[in-house]
Length: 631
Image (tube, rainbow, N blue to C red):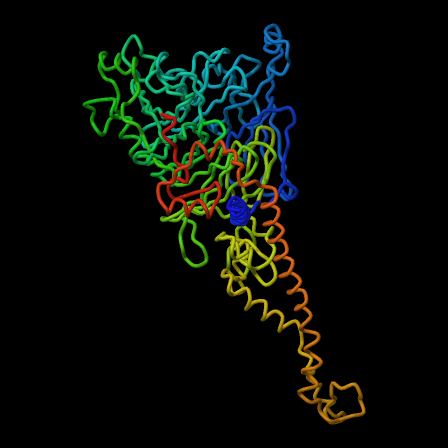
């Protein structure tokens, strides 16, 4: 009997938690997309209403503001000689193409770099015409399977990639924008990177930061397959002393840690960085995954850019604050080349994480300091997953809330970008349309930044918690597209009833009142009564009106009683089924996830777990046991 009661309670709790989860809105049928079959594409550059996509033998300039996604193409094929030489090495013709992986504006044109049939090459174009070609070795990988990242800043372009076919020489390279090698520098050949996967590269004050994952050192291994790192060099590094004058003298790197750590509990690490975006000028938000099999945990961590610079500069002693922190002597240079790792870790605790095993975070985009119609400020975060979903999060100073999930693709999202389109000005209000641009391995998708139009009913619209949605008259709309209708917006669930009543009273005339008669007819006709016999002129009695109205307005009572009785029978059936099918002596097999993480640190943690399955923004919902340690 006790087991049956537990089963009944578990069934009820499961139903309660399923209802409490953020709803998933399928937008795949209404999301415009471009699919590039048999091509591996990457996002190269975005500017307002367009985004540049690097593909096979071409770049695609995708227009985002059209009703359907359109694009123009700029072709750049590998030469016949390069293709012939590639054919001697590879039988598969797929490798003997020019997969474009680098783009940056230059003068009145642009520069492209591609694999060029296993012989990396760059080309300068002006007015659509090829001006010159130069070697792209170190700027683009020989094969498109290897990831590469680039940053054009000042008079230089920085690229993080591999320089050889076997990927045994990963490097960070600096070259002039015009392709000359007068100021070319690279990272040290040994000790800089160990089987890296480059994630992102961006500038930070006078530094250039490279985010990547790599194989751990001997002292870090302890079950880890990958560790997250950040490396830095000075943007204006003059180079090391001889005989290493072609290398950076300011290269250093540090371990990046996103982890849940509690006293007397094992630490849960999210050690695999998947994406990182800048939020303002001082903050960075990173997307991390845990390597633990079966857990499927992902997290978001925040880092301070000033703290990162201070930590990475610790490798160099005695530098002046106004100069580039670097190794100035041969002894210091030899020490940093043999061991560029900084002892101090760059650590952060997740402000939001998920462990349901369904979606793993892969990308994100951010809108900082969003202000809703009530004047409240918050950060909006959209997180892409490996299943083509986008989670929308609302981050305030005290908590982070998951308000909705939108299904926009059927494969992993690699890049997410937020674009805004100006609409017509109405009543002095500047309406703006917000869209998400998602790039996968084979396609580009455009989806709305909110699921407002997919919501049914005023209550669902106001209870979903999305500050971008409001109920207006008869439908849920994005607020930023309908600012001219601000007086009619409903944002609170309690006002939905008032709105419904006002609409009903305005659209359904009462049976006890007649429409006003035109003044010119009043002198010729006497008032009519709502009675069956038209010849009677005596006004109808109040009792008669009530008797006519009650039957028409009380038809919902049988439906209400029937629904209530049905719910009661369903509950009884569930209870009897669990009592009959479950033996009291049978011990349920433990879940592999719950068995490894069974303890909760406090009652508040347990309460938080019961209100949201798989997602959290306050403290760990799960704690590792002492059975196994994950370093």
